[in-house]
Amino acid sequence: MENGATDEERAEALQQWWQRWGRLIIVGVVLVVLTIVGTRLWFDHQASQAEAAAALYSRLQLQHGSGSTEAADELGQRLMEEFAGTPYASLAALYRARMAADQGDYERAAGLAEWAGERAEPVAVRPAAELRRARLLLELEKAGEAAELAAGVAEAHPAYAGTARAIEGEARSANGELEAALAAYRSARQARTGQSRLLDMKIDDLTSRLAAEES
Image (cartoon, rainbow, N blue to C red):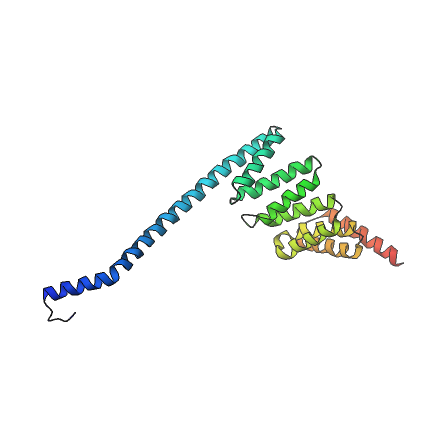
């Protein structure tokens, strides 16, 4: 506005400016308020979901501890269906996998471990779920698949390399891949600190078997 404008001219200019930009300003303010409210509601919902899931998971553990396996399994299924976005869903899947394995149902246990690995939240649960599945695949005599899964965990998650390579070695050995099994066991031995007599025994046994085959 020009400095020499009258009050009437200033008011008219302000009115024109508001007519041009006022609606956009109102829309912007409304959007900001809706975003703040929506974010708050989302966090409240997430907190409520996590609290309910935690309570269910505690009940699952109590039921299993008291010997009510069927009730525990039902609670685990509910967690997986209704609270899939929480960390407790993956933990429940692994819990159900363990219960299924205890009952000798390795096929079902492997499926539950796979579910946990694919939907792992937090992601830190994934390697544990995949190693559980690798062990179950061994029970199902799917040694080749178990070996590849364990090797993948060792590559992607160095903190689990010792356990993963040991499982890989067992799977390679079961699959008749003795040299690959020996290499996996040696990698497992290097990844572990302290004594590991079982690994040392397996390494010595495979070394002797391979030497005998060559002689």
